[in-house]
Image 1: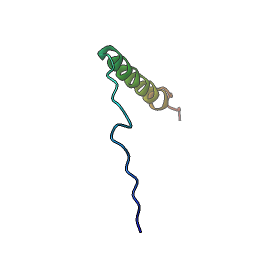
Image 2: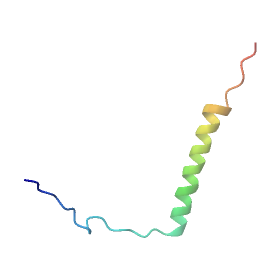
Image 3: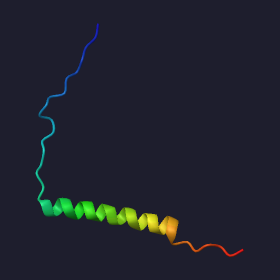
Image 4: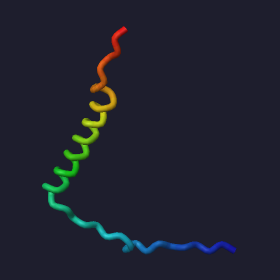
Length: 49
C-alpha cells in the first residue's frame, strides 16, 4: 500500500523585489566572485627559481 504526500501549491509565494535591489545583489555577487578569483589565482607572486 502506497501513500503519497502532496505539497500544496501555495506553500511558497513569490515576493517581487525592486529592480535596484536585484541589480545591487547581482553586482555584489559578481564582485565577490571576481575578488576571490583574483585573491586565490592572481595575487600570488611567482616563485623565483
